[in-house]
Length: 55
Image (tube, rainbow, N blue to C red; front, side, top):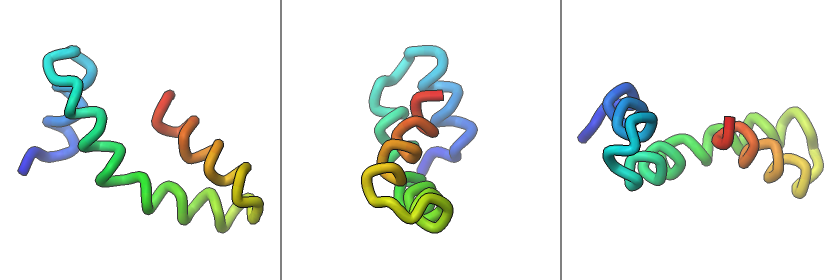
């Protein structure tokens, strides 16, 4: 299994598009839990979680 750092390098170097998907699948549930706890609005929490991965 690739480490997060390995996946970030692959994703930022455009060597492997799948690396972005792997990072997203690995961390999205935790990011979503944090945004839901902070925002309390389902749609706003989803939007904030998506934005976190776009940055």
